[in-house]
Length: 369
Image (cartoon, rainbow, N blue to C red):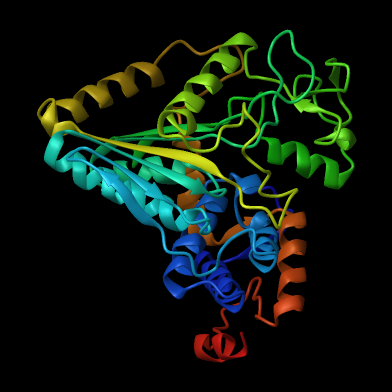
């Protein structure tokens, strides 16, 4: 931790999120699921997708862009697959149900895939991939999003930066996992820089003429994200599009059916998300697989180091170390995230205890909602 920001225990932050979401009208079960996703994301150090967005999710609930008492349902199903209508619920609730269902189907069939249509922003994709890894399976998660990214040779926003994540169980770490947007950076990082009046690297966005810029003030009105590694990020974003919205007739970023979850609060998001679980035991002995994962990890860790480097990390290793530190010594939130949560606390009357150990009566807050 760098010494800046506010410290709060993981439990206190999760409780504040639950109470705030219940106060906004969310069902307690959905509030608990959402809080777990957001706080774990902060613990990983992915603050752009954590509780910094809590107030905006609540604003979207209040604007009816998220249905607080939605009822996601399975509308098509087979032995190894299902399609679920998310009913414009807060994104974390149907997403967790979908990965649980994918894992159940993988247990029976070796592979399970569940696709959620009519969904909303679900935070960090890596959380759901790790749900499968926690069950000893390989998890894959992806989502299309509103068109926010350009493509090589184009000008303006053409396709979503469609996030993708995987997680693989391991022994020396809880999982090896990667969670990325297919733009140079996640769009929420550009938004965060815009709010703070900061310059950004010229590799993040392009201006209205399709040229790289360091000024985020024109995003998203006049600017667009740059794809990761040019045509490679473009191609992978198209793959996600085909495995989400295009596959099941859901919303597509390319054809303009998806609305921004953040910039159009009253509109339903209409994103589509895909959750895949792979049962390792169906393909090889689990012990052999884990041994091979550890052999690969050892080989990567022991690779010759570049000048000035002492350590090589596995994907996800730094995130798990941050998570362990947060569980032990408290979670240090960025100053702007702490300010956003304080503002939310002032608006809804839910106490926020940075650095404290006070508890809030859940029944009292819910009765006020």
